[in-house]
Image 1 (cartoon, rainbow, N blue to C red):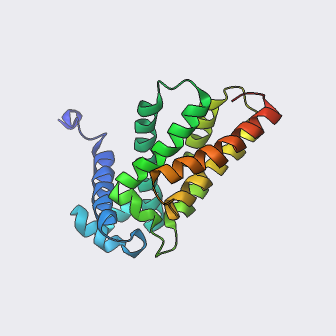
Image 2: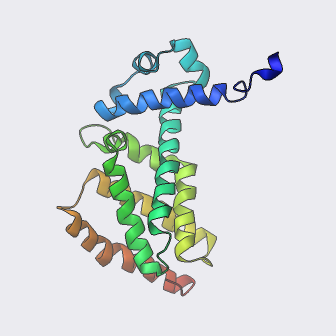
Length: 198
């Protein structure tokens, strides 16, 4: 009858998702840096031993949570800008939509609270997953770009994005003006010097 355990192969994945869901609820209410593994285990309804079976430490759990949310955000972003073919408008819409989606999520927004060490900015800067998503976005703007330039632009866009999450503009109009006046010309300028695209 062991062969009939259809959930067996997914049991670990389901448990990890449940833990990350519980952590997300805590992150929405408290500073992520203030939440320990004990609180997460309690919120998930599991023991600390079970929690450590899936996440070896708090940093691993933080990274897994941010990556999961980044994938979901990236998917929603592509749905919203998928029909925009003009590279300038795609850059503006993609950047501003990313800001909006992070700010709409209480759990993600808490990662960029200025009262604490910017855990979200640190993870974003170090994450290969987030760098790859940024690079995919840059390639969607200029498909034939130099790989080294694509990598630098992706890392720079993540830094500009985290900067505005930490230190927002006065309002949405102010942020759009900053993106149009400073971010777009910089990306266009480096593209002209390199591939003559965008």
